[in-house]
Structures are given as C-alpha cells and as structure tokens.
Image (cartoon, rainbow, N blue to C red; front, side, top):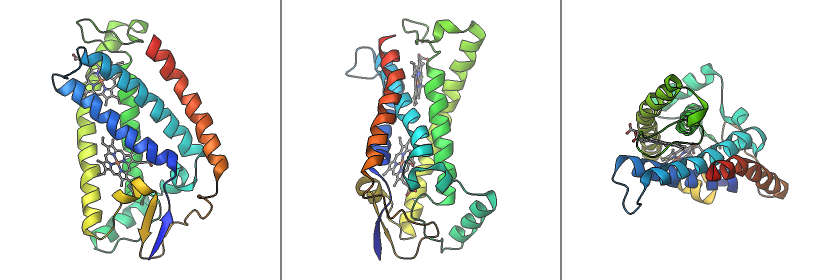
Length: 227
Ligand code: HEM
Ligand code: HEM
C-alpha cells in the first residue's frame, strides 16, 4: 500500500471553507438564523466569500497542481461510463485524483455553486435587503434570478446528498477518501490509472501562485463587501 500526496493545501483549504460557508448560507436562509439579527446580511456576505473561493477554484483548476486541474480529472464520456460499469461490477479501478464519475460531480457542483452565488448578487428579499447588482437589471431579470436561486438551492441539496452518498459507497468498497481531504494523502492499494503527481511536495512555487490567485480572487469580494 502506498500513501500519495494528492490534494495540495489550496484544494484542502478550498474544500473545508466551502463546506463551512455553504452550511452558513443554508443555515441563514432555512432557519431563523439565530444569533444573527439580520441573517440575510450574513447570508450575502457568506455568498461573497463563496464567490471569491469559487473564482479561486476555477483559476486553480486551470493553473494549479496536477490533481487540482480539470484537465486531469475530466475524462471522455466513454472512459466515464466504463468507470461506472466497473464500479457497479464491484472492482472499480484506483485513481490518485478524482475518479472520472467524481470529476463530473465536482464540475457540476462547482457550476451550480457558482451560478447560485452570481444569481444572489441580483436578488432582494422584498423587505429591506437589496444585493449589490439588484439595481443593474430590470424587474423581469430580478424575477428570473430569484426563481433560479430558489430552484438551484434545491438542486444543491440533491448534489450535496449525492456527494456524501458517493463517499459512503466508496467507503463500503474499501476506499477511505475523507481522511485524504484533511491530510492530502490518499492510501492506494493498487497502481492508480491516472499518473500520480510525484513533484507535489516540493513545489513551493505553486504556493506563491496560489497566494497570487487568492489575492486576485479577493478583489471582487472586497468590492462586494463594501458595495
Ligand atoms: C453559493 C452561495 C449561495 C448559496 C448556497 C445560497 C443559498 C440560498 C438558499 C438555500 C436560499 C433559500 C432558498 C429557498 O428557500 O428556496 C437563498 C435565498 C436567498 N439568497 Fe442566497 N445563496 C447564495 C448566495 C447568495 C448571495 C451572494 C446573495 C446576495 C448577495 C443571496 C441572497 C439571497 C436572498 C435575498 C434570498 C431570498 C430571501 C427571501 O426570499 O426572503 N444569496 N439562498
Ligand atoms: C456543503 C457540503 C459540501 C460541498 C458543497 C462539497 C463540495 C466538494 C467539491 C467541490 C469537491 C471537489 C474538491 C476539489 O477538487 O476542489 C469535493 C471533494 C470531496 N469532498 Fe466534499 N463537499 C461537501 C461536503 C463534504 C463533507 C461533509 C465531506 C466529508 C465527510 C466531504 C468530503 C469530500 C472528499 C473526501 C472529497 C474528495 C473526493 C475524491 O477523493 O475524489 N465533502 N467536495
């Protein structure tokens, strides 16, 4: 058995910040939002931070370390279907990064979360809160974004439930994925189908790149925060 470093620090920080902020976003809208006096304000700020995080992840998916890149985990439909078949057959091949089905799921989650955060920028609660871009578009567009935000929130619940269920299925099949999202290291009993990233540990330069992209992604957040 080998333990490979697959998730770099930016991916891990991204994931657990995402979980905390998505949790806060749902909490502030689906409950009374105690102890916050104005839960919708907290909801919006959590959304701005999510927007920054997601912007960072899109950039990191293009420029980051190997397993963070979309090109490494988005595979052809044929390859993805083949993986699904072998998973159902009980012996899925090992992957160092996201497996082909997981990769599709990650892309769909990132898209849905990004659309959710952007649509929120045009919303109003019709009482006292208007999001920063609400005045930029007409009533019809605002109505569209409002209904999209509500529908997509339901889709997100389904996607997150599917994500957690997939982790349970992998656990039953003997793959422990959750620990790897904390430590970055994945235990592999077989040779992975995708080539592991041997240089991940030593790539200090990529941390500087992550910091630069993080600073870039923070710019719209700072603007929205003060808008
Ligand atoms: C990824 C980020 C976001 C998530 C996960 C999210 C999630 C949600 C959820 C679950 C609801 C309740 C929908 C329902 O009850 O059907 C909601 C409503 C709402 N969200 Fe978001 N949201 C996000 C971003 C934003 C942003 C950035 C803003 C504004 C700046 C915003 C403003 C609102 C408003 C105004 C409502 C409706 C309140 C009402 O109808 O009274 N959201 N959001
Ligand atoms: C709000 C709830 C959640 C959302 C929106 C979410 C979203 C995501 C996303 C977008 C990724 C891809 C990471 C990347 O490549 O950047 C991912 C991966 C992952 N998530 Fe979550 N996640 C959630 C909750 C959780 C929870 C509660 C756990 C653990 C119990 C978890 C464990 C994992 C693991 C282990 C992976 C890597 C899967 C693999 O090895 O391919 N997630 N998640």
